[in-house]
Image (cartoon, rainbow, N blue to C red):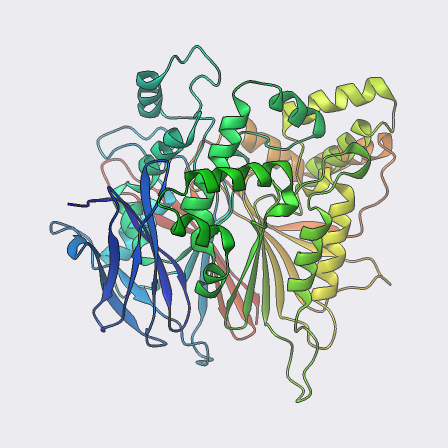
Length: 558
């Protein structure tokens, strides 16, 4: 008899359809059966001895909520008979209802929480606490979608339990030591993270979108050409990168796609047609690693008049020092096309295709001023602006200090800035353009200003950064980022910029909220052309259950 090993995860949801992801213990037919009579079925596909299915559910009623159950070969496996949680539900939007808001929660950087009886040295998990709050108040406002902006698993920073598991499989004295080495070890990370009972229920009832960042593969993944050449010369990297991309495709990427996109996806068709799709997926991952233009991990989702563009800022990089770019030309063209599609004013005088544009990028566009200038300075050193000796120093510093955000790719920073101004301008301008990011283990709001006379957006433009969901926040991070935002940090940054002979950036910006430190989530509530931002932090008093404390609540657009 087939058992449910992982999931269900509710992934894509629109007005009348949804997809539900599961892993089963053996080949089987997976059925999702809803209380309102809608349903879907799919046969599992096999990767590396594991059996997965992404079940399309159709016939849902717009603006409804229906409980669902999961069956494997006709036997119910979800919800468990002894579940303490409310039934998992699929809630469909009704985008023609102008009064109905769209709620989008987001964050990044999540270590798996320890078992319930274990000590959590980094404090309560924001996803756990969100699950507890939603489960205890089923009628409470809940996100329409949860955006996980990178570092969903940590392949290079494993827990004590995972290290014991790895040690039972192989000699940890051999590289990559206590990091994961292959696909099977990656599955352990997802079990550890997604079998947490609170998180498992949360992901079964709140739709999710995901994009990778470096720790999903390895710290500073694709930071530079020399880094890539060195790691490719090791005897363990090839298996690691192929396994990382394969497991990402299975566990995260597939669920980002709409049913129509899945139906047209040749890789998805190939693994489902083959009794064992391992070789086909491995070849796909090898092509993706060798040629980033062979696959697009970025994707678009529209939530009524809210457009979300989730952007791959890791695998799509161009690393040649004389032509460094956060996005390769194909990826940059895709982002531009998606951001500008339908933005012109229509003939009846109404605004363009969306009221709010959200650009999800794991790495922040606008950083503390000192950090921004240091990264631009470092990029100038590495490309030889101050000679070979400074270039060697710059490469060492880049790796040691993680200098690899948009500011470290100056041409890409300028191009994204120009695109935001263009998408946010004109007669059909949206109310807001928000860049949603994580990575930097604190949260803040920053707002740019364009120089007088430069093409400037009519929309309100904001950098919204929220991290971590559950991770450590050393004192050095708190001190460093507070200083980075300070007047003295800004002055020091200008000195770096002068030494690197950097031109002035195309925009200035100021911090309008934060910095906030803690395990946290941000939620955007978008209704018509209004926007509200709320930041909640996971906290627990001694002897009490963890809960979410509201740290900030502000109106972005009225």
